[in-house]
Amino acid sequence: MSKIVDRTLDLLELFGQERRPLTLSDTARLLKIPVSSCHDVVQALQARGYLYELAPRAGYYPTSRLLRLGKEISEHDPVAARAEIVLRSMRDSLDETVLLAKVNGLQATYLIVFEPTQPLRFLAKVGDNVRTLHATSGGKALLGSLDDHGLTDYLRTARLTAMTARTITSKSELRADIERGRQRGWHENNQESLEGVTTLSASFRWNASVYIVTVAGPTPRMTERFDKAVGMLTHVCTMLEMRADAA
Image 1: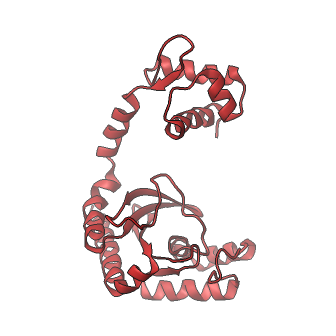
Image 2 (image 1 turned 45 degrees about the vertical axis):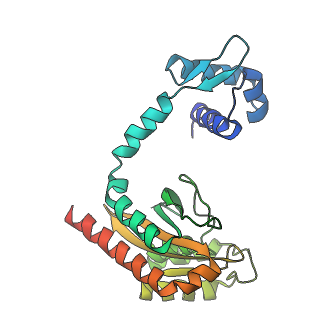
């Protein structure tokens, strides 16, 4: 990625983290880059109306232009338009976190996150990537979408680090687990990436791309509604793939 693009995104994300006006020296210190580099990015964003200066030496802060732009983009997202209603309904029915991720190579990025009303919940943000391939249901769904050659290539170099006592660290066991998921149409992470958390995932294809739907929550609650969650998950993915074929 271009260094200037990287720094621009880092600066915008920094305002989201700090939630306060930042001077050039603040941004340089927090981003660990030269003040001159911060100055170039800040001046460009200010000129385009994305930042304003509160007062001389009082710091900069984003305007609402970025919010308006993001809203306009989001409202016309073709994937969200297809998936949002059914995923929201799934969240409402299960009252657990429901996520949609887009696969790009060996990475899956969350596009939609619907959180439950429960105070104890699985947390993820739009733009986050699936944490790991071998210990999450989303990662297993990604691996399950690969052909046998692609899966073999991944396993050849993969490091299956133990994240909990339940993490699969044997490549032969992981391959067998992926194959079981392929056959039944969904993949499970039963406390393999986080103690006390269970996630279920299934994939569908649209425009030759792979998408993954995940439902996630505390293991006791997920155990109680396991069959319902599996049924809704597979039904939603089948529905979304059918809609994609009809488009």
